[in-house]
Image (cartoon, rainbow, N blue to C red; front, side, top):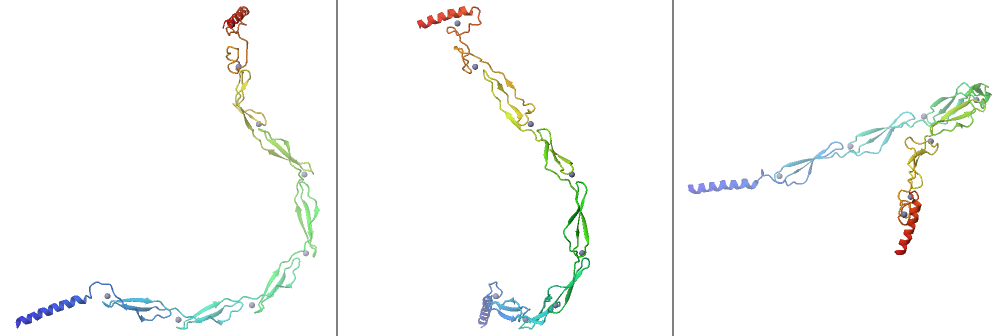
Length: 318
Ligand SMILES: [Zn+2]
Ligand SMILES: [Zn+2]
Ligand SMILES: [Zn+2]
Ligand SMILES: [Zn+2]
Ligand SMILES: [Zn+2]
Ligand SMILES: [Zn+2]
Ligand SMILES: [Zn+2]
Ligand SMILES: [Zn+2]
């Protein structure tokens, strides 16, 4: 019997242990939420609240519901604006009856055209006014006074150095206004007295047709127009030149660049026919036998005569 009881106790303990494991409420898991349900409904301006619950652990998640916002009626004018005073309008929320008011701008006067009520004179200001067609308000302003001037007429002609005068008269009150006419020479065209050169300035001048006064001005220095003269090599019979630089306008030579003349080279070496080996010109007749010049030699004519004979003999036996 004792044995049976202790066996039951063991079974009970084991059973309890199994139940604890299968419940698993504290073990980590992914919540399985039900649908959202409203806890507090939102109003026009206050947010509401909704919740949902995990079907396994009954954990609750809370979420805010946005306020629904007022549902406004149309604007209604409660005070009409006047020309100068602002009016008022309002609207009401159809849900919570909140009221919003708004100012309506004054409409402003509706002015008539300006009408002259007092004509201005030459020296006294006039007046004009206009009226609001809605509220009858009146606005006035001054009209500037002023003479009715005729054209300017010259009363004293100006000279080269003395001012002249002109005047005009008011056609209404005959008031007179005068003003000076600036004096001034009657200048002719500019002309050059001295033309400017490469290294010297020129002078420009104009004369007054009335008093003969003159005015002068400097014409600036032109500066040289440098050009290069190319070098020309000398030949046997003609002169050569070194390179130079000169001004094409005045002929001045740039310092250190004067063109120098090179003497003719002269026929340097002659070949056996007496021709120049450089230019090919025939310079003198040489002895056909010895190819020398016997003219300046002692007994040259005699030697030349013999060499002439030797030359003919050699030609015959060749
Ligand atoms: Zn859960
Ligand atoms: Zn509302
Ligand atoms: Zn008005
Ligand atoms: Zn006047
Ligand atoms: Zn003058
Ligand atoms: Zn020059
Ligand atoms: Zn030559
Ligand atoms: Zn000879």
